[in-house]
Image: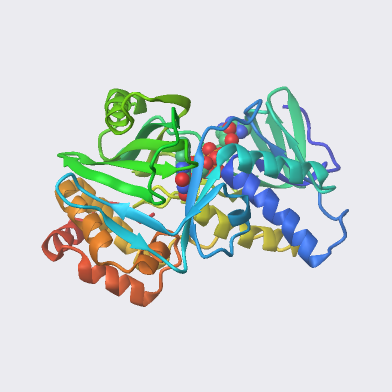
Length: 392
Ligand SMILES: Cc1cc2nc3c(=O)[nH]c(=O)nc-3n(C[C@H](O)[C@H](O)[C@H](O)COP(=O)(O)OP(=O)(O)OC[C@H]3O[C@@H](n4cnc5c(N)ncnc54)[C@H](O)[C@@H]3O)c2cc1C
């Protein structure tokens, strides 16, 4: 590596322009607009490994309409359902919270457009970070063939770790589908349809109606077994054929392996600010991260705009939520059948607003009590006593 330069090119360098890197960039732009701070004060660079952004994922989240991303969403739904093959669906309908559906490409393109018109933020694609060196002034980052200097780095990179112990995986596979004729789709989200289990975890189907002719259908597994998403392909084809009688075509495939929880070695760069999935953004019990990243990026952007960036971030979880998530993870491990029962109980007995707040990390203390009351007591106590996971 070359010797350090004396003048820093950037105040901050964000490593990784995925969900957390771009959400942080967006928040900084919004906060600068809000506070009316001089546009010249910050120079922030995002370094991203990919060469182009694809429509590679869908972000869904519960919100009461206050998140800036609600306006970017393609659809919103006030109801969502839970079912098993032997029970009619239990439907939640909320007056206060909606389930928003934001297309990945929409998020990427809008974020890039904001960065392009900002005098403070810059992004460079095709920049895979190779090496980071701490100097007296800040950091030198080697990415692909170039060197960059910045006063502070914010590490938002994520790549799936190769070796994990104590893992709980969420594996899903599905399609955005175009129907031959406009279908008679319900206007509700099938959040957890046909809940079922095996010894290592649970499965369910997920359906989002996007328009009268398009929908997203996925089969999801949550459990301790690791396998590639396309192992679910045959099952998904079978289910979609059953639902739509072969009269459908695939617009795109959406699949993933989310590490909801697990122990592995992290590349912890001393004195760097950290964000994203390696640092707790993925909720351990659900795999949802979008709303959590929103909360994190809002706090971080505020600190940056007010020139008081803290290296340590506030934990994502409240203590009680942390505890409940770890008990729930243990229940997945020990009794997947009881997990199905609990989730159906949520559909049947939990107020939709309590469920929505629990899912978007804004649950009140009274919400936690309501949730505890409807959980299967014996299985939960066993899972709590057997808690083997680290706190997330
Ligand atoms: C298909 C899919 C669907 C999902 N749906 C939802 C959902 O509906 N709701 C929800 O809340 N959550 C969802 N999630 C979970 C979570 O919100 C996403 O995984 C989210 O993208 C996590 O954000 P992140 O910033 O941690 O990681 P990423 O968005 O993956 O960003 C990390 C970035 O780091 C870059 N990078 C990695 N290594 C390097 C390197 N060496 N140099 C430079 N750049 C590097 C990557 O290219 C990437 O752009 C979904 C996840 C997937 C995979």
